[in-house]
Length: 130
Image: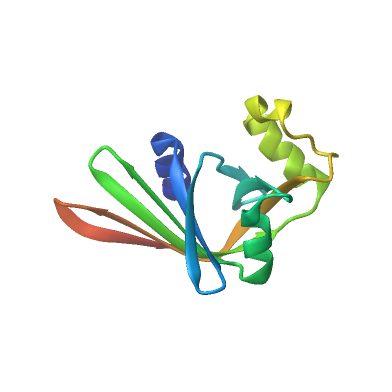
């Protein structure tokens, strides 16, 4: 899991795919945080991403850096604890202008049943399950 975290942090931007009905939806994200041994992302409850994950928690993350790319297929599970939200915002203090642990909007999800595949043009894929 640490290798996945390091890859996504190095890439800085990853793309999160969710589904809305039968339509895939992809958008750039930048938050990735380890808390209590799990990888977390962050969004706002008012955003379509939140509604899409409530209807179907299956998601995929994709990023590219230094000639390699990662795909992480997972289920995103909401963690509504104050401590989880605070950990994310402490890791990304620049978000505090838009989000607060107690604002009723900040939402964090952890990856469950995750399979990450790291690929490049020069070698065999590396598969990491967590």
